[in-house]
Amino acid sequence: MLRESESTSIHKANAKRGSRLPHGAMDCTPIHVRAARGIWPKKTAENWAAKAGVKPRMAKYWLSGKKPVSASGRLALMRELG
Figure 1 (tube, one colour):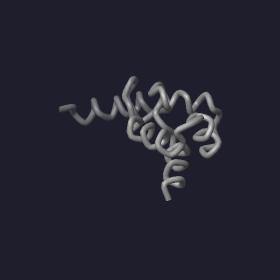
Figure 2 (spheres, rainbow, N blue to C red; figure 1 turned 60 degrees about the vertical axis):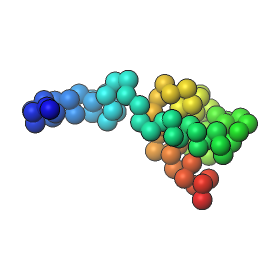
Figure 3 (cartoon, rainbow, N blue to C red; figure 1 turned 120 degrees about the vertical axis):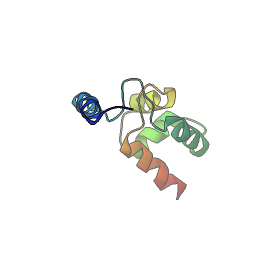
Figure 4 (cartoon, helix red, strand yellow; figure 1 turned 90 degrees about the vertical axis):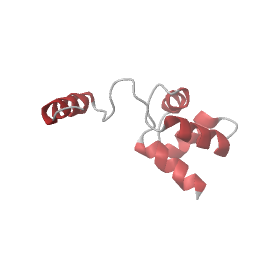
């Protein structure tokens, strides 16, 4: 278990990188990817990108697991699920 000072320094380092996740960590991306592929079985990246307001390349990163799904991507899935 980390001491409070170690935990704080890790949090500050992650905040500087712009991510709350440690390097290489995954958000709930596999769940989001399965949901997106279920909603849009064809042209998943293009449809997800259009609904989330991002470029298709970012949606391809989400689908490949290279980047965690952003808030706009998660919100787009929630809107489609009802």
